[in-house]
Length: 186
Ligand SMILES: Nc1ncnc2c1ncn2[C@@H]1O[C@H](COP(=O)(O)OP(=O)(O)OP(=O)(O)O)[C@@H](O)[C@H]1O
Ligand SMILES: O=C(O)C1=C[C@@H](O)[C@@H](O)[C@H](O)C1
Ligand SMILES: [Mg+2]
Image (tube, rainbow, N blue to C red; front, top):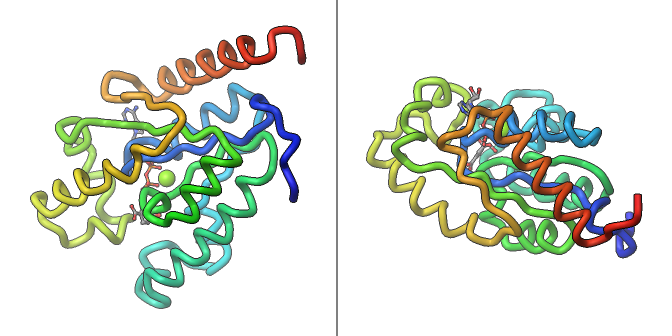
């Protein structure tokens, strides 16, 4: 789908950030507040392979997962009015970074390592890249990943926000920026 005519308020919003920062949780709430479709790319990949992510990694390998991730992000990012939560590793791929930065509003949900580690117990079973790794290894991965997320249009530090508060804050900020860009259009 061509989207050259999309205005800033029609562009899809893409949530990026480290595993477990809240892209799915906050993204879903944001979509509800903005009356948009919510798309979780991890869920869409699971549907395509008809199996959960850890099993996709085991059966087909990370490379196949990343190819499907790119294909689906290419499709959804060109549609208007989505809120799209991409996987924590999606921005490792240069092509995905380019597609998202060109077609969408890219929102980085950031968190400090200190806050993130409090969540590890609810994350490790469902995230193959965390399973079996030591805390030191995960901390290294966390800091390595920060550089890929530095390409974005806007960043929100979520440490002191409940998920719903973060969604409210983002929705209000977006509406304000849309007003500034196009004050009298609907
Ligand atoms: N602001 C928040 N405060 C506290 N807990 C949160 C917050 N946002 C999300 N969580 C919790 O953290 C966990 C991970 O959130 P979520 O699945 O949304 O992360 P994610 O960024 O989508 O991860 P992934 O990249 O692996 O898909 C969930 O149990 C969720 O309830
Ligand atoms: O950070 C990552 O590389 C990943 C994050 C998850 O959202 C999934 O996309 C998958 O587990 C890989
Ligand atoms: Mg998610």
